[in-house]
Image (cartoon, rainbow, N blue to C red):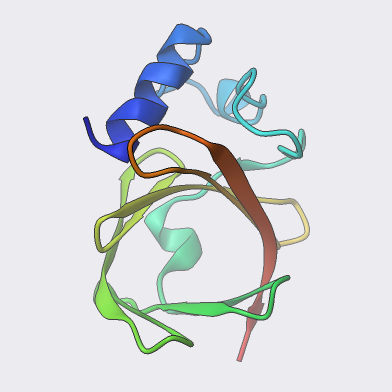
Length: 128
């Protein structure tokens, strides 16, 4: 079972709908998914990321080209898309993103090879 599938199973078992119907529901943090999940954000859309370079709090960055290409400071060149509300797929990796009222970003994902052994989260802003 893939990492995205495992995260989905965890989310569903926690009572989270992965395709929330309303904007209000999308701003409520999913129970048990992230420790620092901001309460005032909304799930990102492709429009929020297209053509933007996001610099993260750990010194990394990601460039989400408007044509669906993705690159980062490590020299990765792959594709990106918003596969479902708030879930960004870069290459084979799925990450949950929120956009906050001030225009900054929050990203969260689970880590582990055969099972979920932890989670990671970062805060970012549009940069040049």
